[in-house]
Length: 216
Ligand code: E4P
Image (cartoon, rainbow, N blue to C red):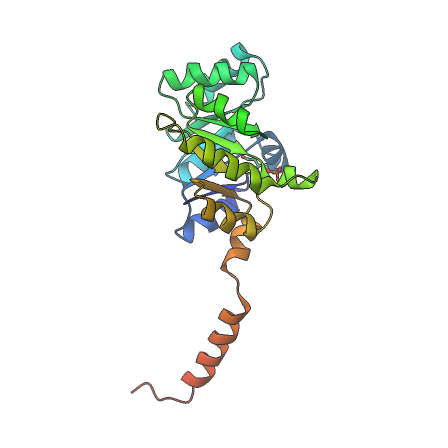
């Protein structure tokens, strides 16, 4: 399973990168707004930090506007890919961009049918939002299971399932159990995944015992 980080904060990205577990980055307009910097400035810096794909989300809602933004965004870094919403215009833009060899992440997916449409439009990644479904009392992980099952029925589908809106470590291991390709994680979740109380207790015990033994 690949791990992307879901943030516009370059310090978080540098730290995750230094851990050696980072495969890519996803951003969105809300995450970029939190940085207080320009969109271009943030994305150019992120693309320099990581080798993997960096999803850059369009702000336009119409097909022509999305393509115009995409044309600029791909100049911000060799690893920039375009994130479009799961709308008719978004999927038209997805098809046009993937036909030109540009990677596309289709975002704001909340149903298996939407995921099928994105696959038909040639999406590189489909981003189902598990946390936002949980927020309204639906089971976000159930959507991942449905998409995994549906995509497995059709060998021609090469769209990768990118689990988004991840809120806690359980979302990650359940996604891995289901065979999702990627999870995009807030830095807090990456941090939580490292932690286990028995690791801390075991380390303290080893450290205490090591003090009783001469090195040579
Ligand atoms: C995905 O690419 C989105 O940026 C993100 O995961 C949305 O998460 P949220 O529901 O926590 O805002």
